[in-house]
Structures are given as C-alpha cells and as structure tokens.
Length: 563
Image (cartoon, rainbow, N blue to C red; front, side, top):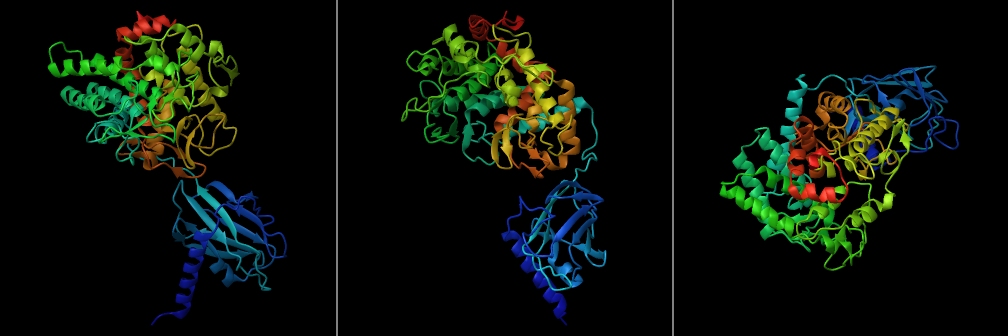
C-alpha cells in the first residue's frame, strides 16, 4: 500500500527541485545577515565547520561539512526538513537535520560525503516556517564548493616518462583527429569540417615531433604532411598567396572568422608556414621522390605569398587581414609586442617578395614603442604590455624561432620570454584576487576557453581560469616551475582535465568549471615546446632554413643560430 505521507513528501521535493532550476542561483548581493529587507523571521548566521560566513558563495568546504544555520526565531522542525534542500546539478543530496538553541539553530549534514572539487547549492525556501508561523520573505541560495582532492589520480612515473606520455597523448589530437579529407587540424574537438590554418601549422610541427618520438613512422608522417600540402595547393582558397583563418576541411572554401574577416589572415598564414618550412627541412632526402615533391610543393606555397600586398599601398607596416569583399576594412596593423613576430621574420626572409628593415622597425617595433622597461615582482620586462600579457606571446612565434641567444636592437628574446613567464608565475603565486587553487604548482594565464566563453587570460585580465598550455608550453623558459605545474595537472587534476587528446583546455577551481574541449592552437604548443625543451628539434629545423638566416639577419637579429 502506498504511504500517502511519503508520496506527499516526495512530490513536494520534486516541486522544489523544479523550482530550483528556475531560480537565479547566484544571489550576488544577498547577505546572510540580512536576507530580507523587512520582517522579523530571517537567517542571521551561517557557520560551516566552525567558520562564520557573511556571504552566499563559499569555496573549499570539507566533503563532510557541518552546516549550521541560525535564525531569528525557533523553527518549525517539519517545515525545516522539507524547505531546506541541498542539490548538485539535477541531484538532490540526502541530508541529516538536527536542531539546537531552542530550535532557532538548524544543523544540516550530508548523509554521505560530498564529491571533491564540486559545486553544490543549499536552498532555503521562503516556505520555511517559524514556530509562530512566520515565513521568510524570499528564497536564500547558498553556493558551496568542496575542496580539491589532493591524492594522486594516476600512478607516479618518471618525469621523462610523463613528458613522453603528454607528448604522445597531445600528438593524437593532430593525428587521430586530423580532418579525414585534408589532414588539416580541426579548430577544436567539436568543429566538424572547420579547420584552422594556424593550428594546422602547429600540427605539422607536432607530426615531426611524433616521428622523432616514434609515435608514427617517417613514411606515415610524410604521407600525412603530403596530404595536407596537396590540399593546400589544389583545394584551399588563397588571397595574394595567404590563407584565411578558417577553411572547410572537405572543400577548401573559406569559412569567415567574423563578418569582415572572410579573406586572408597573414598571422595564421605565418604559423602555417612556420610549420611547413620545418617539414621542408625535415624531409631532406635527396633521392626519395615523395620527399622531393613535398619540398617543391612547400616552396611553391612559400614563394607565392605576396608579403608586400599586406603593406597596404607601401606603408611601413604589415596588415593582419585582407578581404576580397571588404579590402583592408578591418585595418588591423601587426604591431608588437604580441604573438606575431614570426610574420615579420618570414616576410623579411621571402625569396620572392621581401620587406625592408624599415617595415620591421616602424611597423612591428613602432620605432621602439613596443618597449616596456618596467619591473614586476622584481623582474624586469623588456617588451610588451604591463605584466607581460598572455603567455602565448612567448610561444607561437617561438615554436620555430629559437629565442636562445637571440637579440636585436629591442631586446634579448630569451630574457624577454623567460621574464614574461616568471612574471606570470609570480602573479599567480601572489594571487591578488584570491582565486581558489592558484599556487606555485597551479599557474599559467593565456588565451583559452573560459567558463564565460573565451578570453585572453593575463595578469591584468584574470578571472580565475588556469590554462595548462600556459605553463607546459613554457617548459624551456621555466623548467622547474613548469614541470611542477605539469605534475600537478596530471597527478592531482588528472581525473578532471586529462583525456584522449591530453590536457583539456582550461579550468577554474573557484567556480568549479572544467573545459570539455581541446583546441589546436593550445595543444600544439605543448608538444612542440616540450620537444624543443628536450631536443631542440623544431627550433633546429626552422633556424636551419637559409632564408630565415638571411632574413632575420637583415632585420638586425643576432644569434649563433643564424650563422
């Protein structure tokens, strides 16, 4: 026989759960000391594990919390047990209820331990009654998150084996998930036919690292890169020799990146060419016809870029975009300091349409205006914005360009990139905004997915999101600190952020958010910079290009690698 009281209680909980889903879960301005502007019955104290709180968002609680809710009048016990509910997503958490202080104190505890690093909501509904039949004026919503489980999620292995594993798993993004028609890298793991030109350049370099690590054979890598180059040569749309930001990986048609960005993207093209020139140097057999044909096809693409066109009528600066429909309407100059130094290095190195040094000095360096010269956390920063900006500035151009012992009139680039990374690290350790999780082993701000979309995270643009690619791709610059972070990401957060293509894109331990995506432009630098740290493979290939040696020297760069 159905117990009508139990059924009534069950239906009421379902009703409350539906109500939860319709509420705004972030009562941003509620204070537990004044949850309602008027009335005598209200919540007056909130105590969790002997800590008193005056706000409604509370982080780092224990998995078995003792939550004490103090009210201004004695509670109706039956009302309390039906009107105070904890939930996690669509699940209602079973609670134990007890009372104290003459029934004006409600003590709730989960019947089973909560999950670590998880968000929960404790809802006190307005239907809660006092013994005198008063009710609250509005619902009170308390957002809770549990602390990180710091136990290892995977067995410990040597650092060398861990680097092997990260390289191999990250390599799979470009190998297993490469577009089946073109071989190009998809923008992200949910992109379907959308492939990214810059990310595909990173993917080519990742494939070279994969061959070197014996993840695949040399013929396998040769065939894939030949597939990519053939598609770029015969099917992909180009504009004055340059490629768009996005292509359809099946047809080669341009996919607009924005309303007026439906043509050439010179920066993305440069990342692609950074990778292709490395492939040309790697497949250097003088007798293998497939390698000979690949080198010839890469040279055709390389020599076909009309760098001077992007000076927009002979100006001493290069422009980022050009559209067949809108021309130079976006009107974005490529000025330093940012991720695009590779553009000027390649333009100066062209065999067919080189730029003079004044374009670099006036356009990229802004006649010296890209200099910084200030110190942050006691660390001097030669170039760039305050506090250095996102860390991809130190990665994208320097996947191929070796910054070691590299300098010109504006900076020593090893000092620039190392100091930029150390400032980023120091900021995260200082943690001026008190985000959960930031530490000497959990750091790294760069452009990535975000719990609010996508953001170029940096010390002056920080919302609590850590991007694993930031610290991992900085391994050449800060080997000890980057390795500490890599171990933390794998061993401590591996159950949350480690997957089939390596580390997922980003996470936020304050809001308990973990990305479910992988992005080509973030996966690529990880494997490439790990390999550069270990063997210098990609640096050695790119810097071996005779055009690069000539072009960079023409711009005033000095380095033993340019000899």
